Length: 556
Image (cartoon, rainbow, N blue to C red):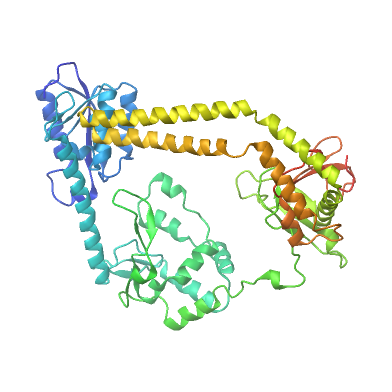
């Protein structure tokens, strides 16, 4: 496998945690020795090593591997060398792609010493080697699952110890109370059993300077990357408290297997049905008694109430309809009561104004009664239109729709899409012919066909849209449908929820713009302002002539 050119090489070394337990044959040290010896014997200048220690061969997002790819793109070397193909990776599709496509297309020679693989020579056995490496990956995954299942069935704890526990020093598969955190868990249960809410418990723990679970692991127990450690909060929150109060591990029971990986090659985890969870009772010392646990469960969430059931609570008819014109978030009820007056001090305000969130919204608020009256009047204006006025309104909308979408333009788009679909069919037929003749590898065929199929699906969706009735016809039908529904009403004295959602799809509330400029002024100011309210009706959308309605006591 001697190279015929001046070779500047990168050595890539990888070892997974499972392989490290199997002995020294694949150790980083032995890989390095084999690669260095081969380079000396073949006149290769070894420029740099890239090492991923403790990374699975099924994962190609390894830090050193990705760093090596970046260096190769910058021209750092013209050769990559590994001990064998399994060091490159065990995922058959990905390993074959890099070895047989990516490296050759970028002018990079790749050598796997032990497998006698060299991209500058024919590699007849390569498909079988890639396949066997994936078999090893799948078999290793199966063995790990079997071991974990056996440990769970025997009550051995094979996960990260929960807050309040640590691994027993004499038996690493058993939990033992953590002297530093077990009293905190007991305190949480006692406070919950006494009736304190999860939020109050969290606030008290923060006031006493108690370190929360993830931060405790970062500081005192587990090793985290800088990125992982940065995510650890310094404060307790009520969700963390609730999670502790609901966990039966504190009764001395082991509960594992609540989720699993979606597949061998996937990192995503999916939930496992409750009946398939691995539950083993009395496997370690409990931190709380059953009576205390049940009392805490009984009080958990007891303070939660459905406030909409109370008569004095303001119930907005605009829920899910009124949104902020600046950020698109929902508007919710807010306000106060002054001298017994409620309606006067009732507002709808943007929910995205908190200072502890990214890019909070500012200043979008409207008096509830003003919005009700504005929408009611606008609806009554539509309901009062005569048949001739409705016809004229619909004709104008049809004219605008026709001008926006030129018929010839639609035909051209349709012709181009159909021509491209025919071309894709010819390309796919040619690809399969090349594959049958041995000119195209399996993985490359699959990748190219998949890309063409995705493009084809998009073009078919576009054609379906273009073949639909033209916009002018659709607009006419929509107006007819809306005003047929409107004929059931004559005049609205009051606006209720049912009528609103029957006619209105969305209402966008803009910020107040004060006379002379600016969106924020001191409270109780009498300066005139303008506030745009955009009403989007069912079927017909926003009516052009009525768009940009003004709200406010003194519009500018």
